[in-house]
Each structure stands twice: as structure tokens, then as C-alpha cells.
Length: 583
Image 1: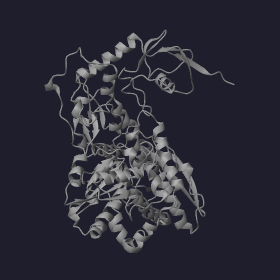
Image 2: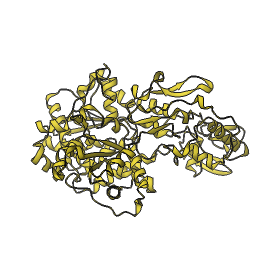
Image 3: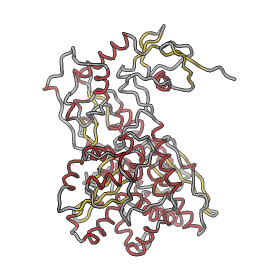
Image 4: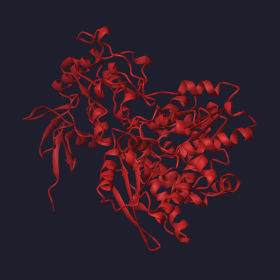
């Protein structure tokens, strides 16, 4: 029996276990101190000095960097700690663009929040002169960078390096001239940013925000000449409720459908349907590669940040990518092909909107490969956050809505489509179908739990396709994916399929989702919500979706047919060589 470890917080004895720092123990005990730079899934930086506490015998310490020791006596709100925090806030505000009412982060900005909590009404320091303000960078299709609102916490720099292994953002200059900027001071749209949005997800202020398409979509909805249809990704349904007081992981798909109709969308479809469609194509493609032994391992192609990473960093590996479009980019051309005929309208009068957890989808929809006759198949991508804003703007009481169903036939889906939103979900869904396609037998236990998890670590799962041994690897974050690419290049890879999601934990933690960077448990709760729906649906294998079967019978013929390839598959291009002229 080991002795329990305890320390004291404001005179109260608190037990702790393996918490890495005092801040985590303080939070676990139901208390808190403010911080700008600390994020549990990133290394501790200790840059902002807001989380200072007073430790008896040790003086002032930053709680995010100090490891716990038994018997420590910690005081959170002494006169000294409060004075330090107020001084930090005043210094930050003196150097900050304080146009709060028109800021994209107004109402969710941590600097704004703490200034209110600490009663900052006067700033004793001279304000930054107007001539020192820097231009706003809106060159990216996904993100907007406002250096005048940056507080130099470094969270974005660490997220880029530690999640994606990139150095797209970094510190430049020294002293009062220090800034965070893309490489060589270039605009964000001109560097190898993969548009994942994790930098914006951890940013405490309006320095990095999602590029909004809300006003453009409102313009289409209010245009009486247009029919506006919408699809929504699996991960959005277990996160949108957080913006209206629901717990993470609550499946709000019925409320989403109702809200979208109140906003004014003419038809509502579910990207889960095309996730099932993706599996039909990808499982067939995988089995063909497995039989021929060519271009293995197969890389999944649902994540646009991962695809851009391969194009820019490892173009020689493009042959490994599945040629399947993402579920969003599969459903959109199907809608473009069939809905105008159904509604009796011209293509030019149809507007296709996608609700996605992902900022990189804003980049994806602008790719020339995903356009026809010069017009994108997906006209606009709105993130979960943007949809929440539209719901509020429309004056809708989200929690008072009665759940509604999506429109047919592209609203029917299986549990396999649902789990796409979590890391490991694409591979699990593919195996459920590939097993039955390959063996002709019914897969009795569809829960392949070894593939599941929200940590960034790599997971190898060995499977048996009736005598054929198969290893599937699942990773999230591009930093982890890079390790797998290295194994392939060195001839050490033992896996035949590689699923990669750029965001930690998968799409549930996408850059367009509601804020989750303060609590690692939120990812797990969202994933649990998807797996719960999967377990409750009547069909849990993509090939058992009746609407998918009908689509093949009446339109696509069979998986990987010529017609299916025309609409559902694409090619990717070497960006490293500069031959690609897209966004």
C-alpha cells in the first residue's frame, strides 16, 4: 500500500496522483487560476504568467510549469498574485487592438473575459501607437490572422509544431518588436499551412480566427431565385449542442435538422450517407490493391489537411492515397447531378452548403479537381462554430426545438457512417464492409474497439480476412503520420492500410468545432456520442444502407464502376514541384 500524496491549496488538503503540474491539481480540486498559454495537450510554456500562485517557501511560481510535491502550501489569490495578474492584463491591453465589439472572438475571448473578471477599467501604460499596427492577413481560405490581437502566448506555435510537426508559425524579431508570423513573414496562404485550424482552436484571442462564410450563405438563403441545400458531417452533431449549454457528446442531429429548416435551407441531407458511400468505394479499392499488391499501404483520403500535407511534403507518396473523394465531396456532386432534376431548376440556381467540423474543408471545396464547368461542387463550407452563430442570429431557441429528420434519400445512414467523425472510425467502417466483401461471410462482431481512441499515439490492429492477415494503422496528427511515412520509405512498414486524421482525436476535435482545448476529456465524450449512435442504429455496415444500394442500382451501377469513378473519385497533384496552381 502506497501513501497518498497530498498538498494544500488555500488551507485545504488536496490529494493528487499523476498530474504534471500544480494547475491541473488546482482544476481537479474544483478551483482555477487564469491562463492564456496553457493547453493540456501541449507542452507547458509558462509565457503569460497569468497562472501565478504563491507557494510558501518558494514565492511566486507559475502553476502550469511547477510540478507538484507532497506538502506544498499553495495560495491562489493573495495580494501579490492578484496584482501580478492585473499588471499582466494591463500590459497586454495596452498593446492590444481593443475593437472588441467587431472582433470575431467577441464574447469568447479570454483576454476580454479576464479583463472583466479582474475589473480592469483603467490602463496605466501607454497604448500602442496606430503606426505600429500591422496589416490583417486574410490570404488563407480557412483562417484570418490579425497580429494586432496577438498576446504572444505561443499556443499556436506549439500546436503547429506538436500536432502537425510543422513550423508554419513562429516567433520573429526581439523585445517589443516580437511577433508571431508565418515563415519568412509571408502571408498564411503562401506557406505550407495545411489549414487544419488547430492554431485558431488554441488561440485565446482574435489573433487567429476562422474565415467566416456566414454572410455569404445568408445572402444565398435570402435570394428567392436560389434553392439552398445543406449537408452536415458526423462530428458536428456531437458538438453543436455545446454552444447552447448541452454536454459534449450529446447527439443533437435532430435539433440541427430543425434549426437548419428554421434558418431557411430548402433541403437537408446528411454527410453520414456519403460516408457510407465512401466506404463502398474505398473498401472495394482497398481489396483490389490487396489482391494486386500494388500501392500498399493504402492511405485514407477523407482528411483534406492530410492530403495537402502529402502533396506538399511527400508528393512521391501520392500513389498510396485512395482516389476516393471525401464524404463531403462525394455527396456534393451527387446532389448537383440529381437535385436540380428533382426540383426542376437549373444548376446555377442550386447552392450546396456543407456544415463541417473542419477549417481545411474551406480549402477543399475550392480545389479545382472538385469543380465542374468552373463552379465548385460544394459552394460554401460553414464550420460548427459558424452554424451556431447563424442559429443565434436567426433568433432560434435551439433547446426548445422538436427534433426533425433529414430529407430522403440522402439522409439515411448506418453506424459505420457515423463513426467517421472519430479517429479510427474510417478504418473500422472500411473493415466492416471489406471483411464481408472479401469473405462472403457475415461479420458478427462489428465493434473493433482496438481501433478506437482519442490519444495521438499510433495504433496497429491485426485482422484476419479468412486466412489473409491484415494490419491497419490508425494515427491522428500529422506529426504521428510522419513517423509512419518514414517507416514506409525505410521498408519497415508492416501495415496495409493507414488512416490519418490531422486533428488530435479526429474530426470530433476539428479546428471548426466549439472550444475544447482546455479539457482533454471533451474529445472522448464527443467520440462516445458517435459510438453510442452507431450501437443504436438498425444497420451498422455501410453496404447494408438501403439508400446506398438504391443509388448504385439506379445511378452508379456498382462500386468502382466507370460512372462511380467519374463522380466519386479524383486525383491529387504534386504541390512541391510548383505545378499546382490551385489555392
